[in-house]
Length: 297
Image 1 (tube, rainbow, N blue to C red):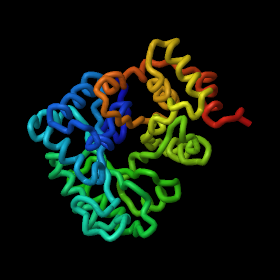
Image 2 (cartoon, rainbow, N blue to C red):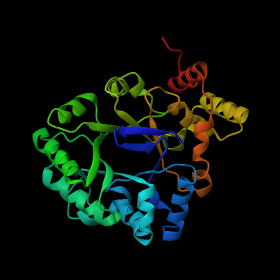
Image 3 (cartoon, one colour):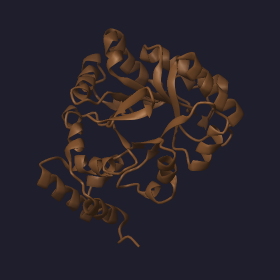
Image 4 (cartoon, helix red, strand yellow):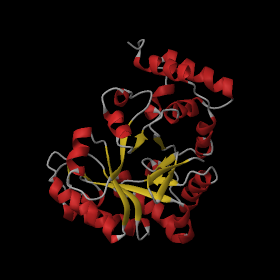
């Protein structure tokens, strides 16, 4: 599978497996989680996307049990995790409400907990999960730099940041922010025209796309013409409609990394099909036109 440079000495698989729903599966046994991991690795999908908050702060621990049982797996994967969202659940059950914390103390403590839960001495990419309206960039930026210097984090980035949020944080940092994970799909096309994607392209920053299938909404019939086009292209190329929707993102020159989070083992085994789909310029615009519901200007 194609790999994308995150930093000069760190690459990610072009398709990323997301752990958001791992704790929602009926089967969270080590055996079942290992089967998902093996299904990814067999296709060259080596990058695993986490966040401390996933599963009410439980998912990192579930995945970590598998890594602790077979430590050699750590050398075969890259781990992404995120911090700064606090909700009244799990280890933060004492919180009075949902809020964000980008203080140096919280970022550092959150990473230490993630390392313990995951059973590793470092993560490959740490992301600030959501823009914090109370963020002090002169505290947050140096805190991220310090974690890179410590070797506990190989690279840092953000998630859901608008260009101005990104620039503010970057202005207080020595290390480059290496990625921005944003919502991006045929169901969420605004970043293609509102400047979010252009900002990342201009700076050669890796865009990671969460919910690349629109939470499953692309095939639910709410946009019948788009669903029909996806099915037609899928039938022509002998693959699944979901693979076509993901391939639409892969075809874009911004080097987008879709983050896919299905719990279904048979679907996980087919994620790699997206890399085989051919999407030419007119087909890309056909799907885009159907997604936005009108002809381009």
